[in-house]
Image (tube, rainbow, N blue to C red; front, side):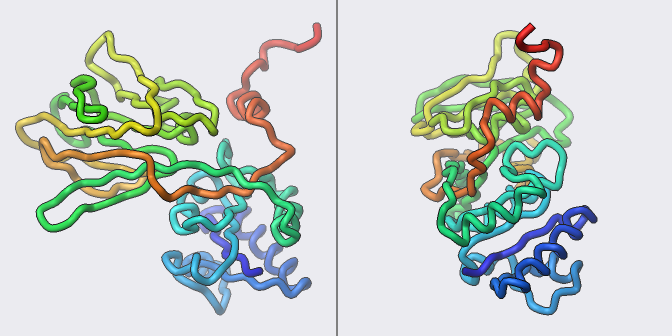
Length: 285
């Protein structure tokens, strides 16, 4: 088995962990390869570009925070991904640094389990071709530098849902419900729920609320404004500027992400530890 390693090179802790991992692999004659940027920072001789890694390995290891795992997952295709948290919150990264080697051993032994996470697919039909983007967390359209409040028109399966006057619109998966959507007032959704949430950003309408919909719905979004350019972001990465009335179609992607699961970690525990729920109450008293 061969592992692909992706490191958050801006974190010295992640780089130190990668060096320890290399020693552990070499002592056991386990094959590994770094993506190019990680290899350069660690001064490793062999590397493969992130776009080609999935064809050179059997599993991925992400050393960083949730952002590093999101980046890694886009190129992992359906290969299993071990997310090791060297960041702060770590909603997606299943394993602590101390748990990393145990997780790798389970993958080597074939005794691991998988959390399958669905993705969003955003598509835009142009004059010559259709542009497609995928997102594990969310697809976001924002007003950007547009000086006024634009109107976002949303349709579900071809039927008008509403026209929102807002700073932007977030379409999030259940996985992404604890990311930007939560910050904008959206609900927290358990990861295996087959739903999406549509969350307006700073709506200029008192009655507007986030809405949870089935993940089999097809969502169409356009910006009704006389002019301007509106950034489309997928998982926090800019993809393109949208013109007024240009339609973005968002639906469930056929391609899923396979995250190696930490069987010792429960979702309730994550909410308590990461969001500090229940800290003001001592249970059992």
